[in-house]
Length: 534
Image (cartoon, rainbow, N blue to C red; front, side, top):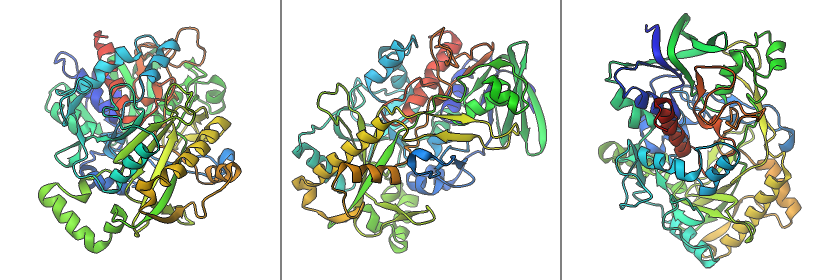
């Protein structure tokens, strides 16, 4: 097994696959990609509708438990994190969304030079191969296939019309830096199959002699010598390995695992590391802090028109499966989210503060917390706070590299997040009374009965509010002089040379939308930074 490389990348997820492909473009540089999960080659990872089975699957999902959260009645959750090549892009809902121009301009105002919208926009274009009508807002020569939904569900048209009836316009191009309005979203798909970063970036690069990919490689720690990252220690099965990095070590293990790897390596809050008996290499109090997540809530309604819910029975699924296997068409190629909207809960706001997703299926949860698909015709509307103020942290449970990290996210610790969710729920009730939806809705599914007061809505949020699967920020970048910034704007770990973090954890503030496309953008720009091109 390879013992040395110029670049060692820890984590073969959405960012890691991009970095491996881009850095190995230079044949004079060697690249070693270490992924703790497997190859990810599976029928479900290719099929767009496989998301429902992949999330929570022990082979493809880390299934990370949270601590009891006092802000939501001490409920616990299971956070999803992709555990295979492709990471989150191999199991997610395939929504392609970039966020607002102002998200990135805010990063630059916080001192992250080079991360304003005008600087990062070219990297969205570089990554993308758009399958829709040509547009200056979309790239056409990148690896990542981005496609309109081929056969949208009928309920989507009702949702869009209802929005226009309450004064929310259709946004013809939500990828141009302004997401305000309602629209049919795009999906990371190609020819009726998922287009993950492993398919888009890594597979075409794996024939290169200078790229080595090792799966099942669990990184225990980064080797640090006199303040310089020299390599990594990792296990494959029960066998321990060491690899040295002649140029850099790059951590791309995701928002939950990247800070854990740094802390296991002695890089993080000194008091916490000492308490676990870990020798301190660099006291960085911001490692694991600033954990941010999109606060999310949903409502479901019964309707009198066919929806996806009614077509998921065993008999119908036989036909759906044949259609997919033979032609890559039909229900199993359809992403769950097909219509989205970015809305202002206060007309005085400059930017939308909630992001809505309409699903042609309704999901409830039984007493065990298991998802139960409603088989009656129904649909759901879920939405999240665009820029949540609630913060949490990630810590080590023990020094054991195989123990899962502590995820202590006070999900609704900021009252402003709860208030926005309540306003959003009331807006959705208004939407459901618009003629286009009122004519087909036959009754509530969840909540039932519909709350009447703000207090009742807030109680619903505390009882049923959840996560958006968009965790960011636990290794955030920031300017010199910021004591909580883990990285500088060049993504270098402060106090340790030869070490960077490049994934969603670097975000100083959350983006307003789904995080996969921004993570790919971060990796594209990160690769150019390393090459000296940015």
